[in-house]
Length: 193
Image (tube, rainbow, N blue to C red; front, side, top):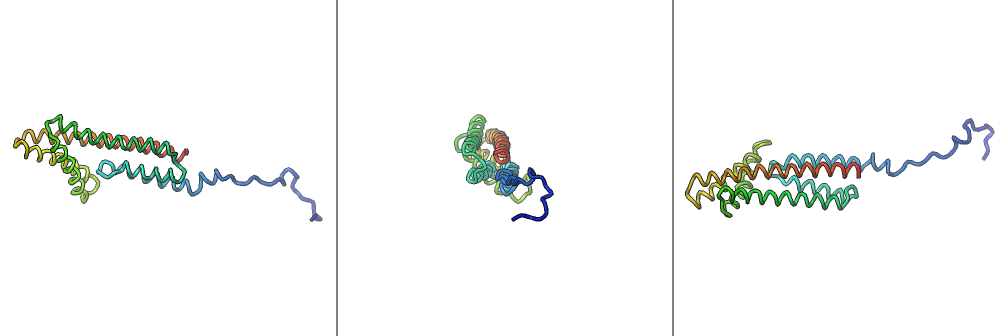
């Protein structure tokens, strides 16, 4: 169909505009919103680690979801899963080693683990620092009480309790440092790809 009026635009402008590429929509659409939500959840999980909440595993779960959705590579997930596992193993061995180093027995070690778990649960009602302090105090009391029952010596019980307390604080540091590394790699994986 021809028009009676000439086209006012030159022929080179009449070419078809290029279509919007899927990649540009992908980076500014739904996946970016999901990436931001995932990063925020991982930041919250990082701050939960000192409170005895399995923040590392929450972060790994978010990254696993990102892997399922194709935003995080499987290799990245496996490496970070290994890092989280090593941090948990380090916590276990730190408490075990310090318990033994300060004169504790195998039972004192398990008393520290149980006391720490009970402490975290008891400390939950106190906002923010309650679980952290109660977890550390619970580890101390668990190891000290078991040692006191075994040796009937208050000084030995206090020494073992102190060793477990030092180990618990070091373990929190190791797990938080691992969480920071997982967060940094996770942010890169979600935003860069």
